Image 1 (cartoon, rainbow, N blue to C red):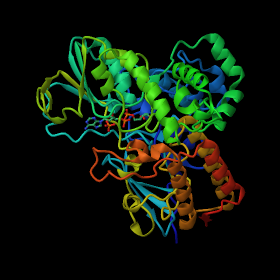
Image 2 (tube, rainbow, N blue to C red):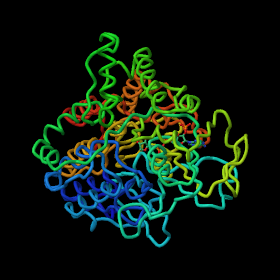
Image 3 (cartoon, rainbow, N blue to C red):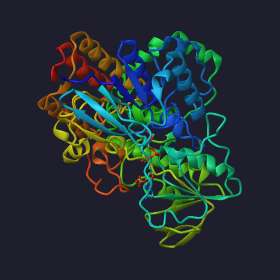
Length: 545
Ligand code: NA7
């Protein structure tokens, strides 16, 4: 006799992906429960409330394209919306989906164990008062960038002042944004200059008595191009949503930018320089995802654009030594995530801002008074850690996920990551990942690309329901073949040759010094084609029973 599970499906996570997946399952007639570790919906937008936090995607393409009501009623106030507005948008979307009632909060999953006899998972929670529950299918929408990572520095707990990790920022209890903290006149130190650090630094420079930026490897930053969203533009967007959707869907990463279908050196110098100028000033990822088609793959073309951006940095930063410190030496333009900025480089011209180049003097420890580097102590009132995440695999690794024969997912992944379209790993039946490692949504505008993956999975779940399927698992050979495909595609881009969260290298995590294929960088159209081919061939590569 087999047992029936408590739920047909559990969705872990109430971020943008989890909410939509839970909604789709409910609408398909699945008995679904959403479980969220935090006290509210919003995922990363609920937690990352640091000053300056905003999207680097054009506002109109960061959302639920599938929800016509929302797309028609919502008015963005900025071309690139700030965190409180994005969070309000998610709250409104949840209201339209009426999805809160299907969730429990303060329910942090710490265990998911497959029961082979019954074909379901037993799910355990960190909160001791929460009893374990069972579900046939698990949809883990944990987020690829949701497990904050602190640096591994001695004395980190001894600091007497205030300290914050950007992804755990105190919240305004009565609103959607950050708590009203007063940094005016204070000595603030920021560690980290990824997209988060850059946004934080720009804001802190406006208020801090003195801001010290502790910089290890600089990044190639380009202007965001933000501004007010006019009603006229908003009206135009609303009447032409399909055009925007089509443009995003045809692009590499789900943004309204397309590569120029020419190689850089095939274009006369004058013309190419004028184009680069225009793209540099263009909105969002214009230069990263909209330049000549070979810039991210051909070392010489890449070097040309890198030198172009380096020159911009030299023009914008007055002190030549500071400018040189801010020019990346370890990687070319676009090989790591390009932070977008608004007056970031000019911050270093301010009297109240100084830069500590950690290649010249490294951090030795945190003391009660501040940050000590090899050339002395930097006394601080506030330390802000903009040090990123245990990216992509991190949130899955923190749950004890057990598949067939009690095998642990983390141990399998430590041996070598193998997934089928980033949605499942062989040996873990009925356990699905949304924006999991190697998923097409990892190197993509997440709301758009995760919705496409959710729609695809939902098609499969409709069929599974009709056929009374209780167990869905990819074949090892199919998963190996997909991972090989993702590996080959990564090999074609220069970003595969660089250490960053894209390739899974993290100096703050012991053992994470080898590059992996964590993302699917082949582009959204290729990923969709792969998934559609699987679906149209009767879900080839899957065993369903
Ligand atoms: P990132 O992009 O991982 O950046 C983290 C930054 O923190 C980066 O500059 C790191 O330098 C720096 N860091 C980390 N540890 C240290 C130590 N120990 N000492 C000095 N500097 C350190 O995280 P973000 O939060 O900015 O962005 C992550 C993604 O979220 C982003 O790409 C968007 O997609 C949203 P390093 O480069 O390792 O030298």
